[in-house]
Amino acid sequence: MSQKQPREFDAVLSNSSTPKEGAVLGGIAGVKSRLNSSVIEVRVAALSSALNYGNAGIDLIIKSLQDVEQVQRYAIQILLHKGGAKGKQALLDYDPKLFFTTLQHWNIQTYNPQLSITHTAYSINLNRIQASKPDKFDLNQLQTFLQSNQTTQIEALACKMWDDYWQHDTQYKDFSNVLCGAYDKLSNLKALFIGDGDAQETNYMKSRLLLGDSTPILKAYPNLEVLQFRGGWGLKFDKVRHENLKTLMIQTGYTLVQPQTLKDIINLDLPALEYLEIWLAESFHYGQDISTEQLAPILSGKFPNLKYLGLKSSEYSDNIATAIVNSPILEHLAVLDLSQGTLTDFGAETLLKCPIINQLHTLNISNNKLSGRQIQKLSQLNCKLIAQPQDNGQRQQALN
Image (cartoon, rainbow, N blue to C red; front, side, top):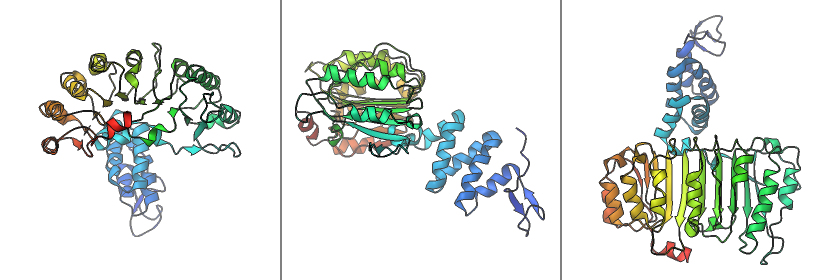
């Protein structure tokens, strides 16, 4: 790549303050000089210029990840969206949280029907029409929101429902019909949350909100990058391909009440998927591990771009740990999250004896059933270990 000609904001080498009177330090050297400036705005501007210089410029942007927050934040965006494979790998190595796209990337505002839409991310409450009665969701707020002329600027939407066991089949379908019917009004939608607005109050996401067939949502929104569900059970998918989905999160206390749900997830064709989080949790098949065998396609590389795998809140975490260390998926993962489950010292020992575990950036085994002695042994791994706190009975209490 040819060196760019100096511009008026390039560094000046002389006692003079203007390019006309001094020698201009242009090209990559000029970018380096501006990145050493004491002025934050100058360093931020230099990051954009660095893109003109190929891999050498990308290297400078990567170094800026160590800079102050304002500069770092801009460097992250450049590496994520314009840094190519090298930039994304640098983010993954530096801190996987910076690499993955989740709803936390947006500043979500609570929607107020009395105010105009001025942000790109909103949360909408779908309360029941009559509280504490088996009634349908009130879709009026969602419908009012969709009537705005500004909805085409929306990138993230959180649709918060409140659990209602009795009307789930009808109400979820009604909600899905309204949402899918507005695909042209939400043409820039990239992130979508659908689920229980109360479940986040417990770490174990227990909810009685029954979900439904979400295939139409995937079909209606081909540009979605993040799809997150939080509820009880009832989630369904047909076999469908989605080109752009990077993050899929299924947060529930009861995923395996219907084993078909896990099969539906695995049957999805998601070539861009990087982040998969499934809360396996409780099952009606007590005493029988129906999850580990079903997870085999995932562990065998069903989603080839997967970098984060969260198999959380499982009743059979030891079995899952054994299956993982005997599968090829560890060769590609940056983060393995087995938190909030039932992992014991036995399962942890299996992880400890697996050399490839050290290739991870992060291993999360917090909120399990590990002894202090085993955690001390695990702390010798070369990856980042998240092991605290451990479960002192909260899981059983939360899910009962």
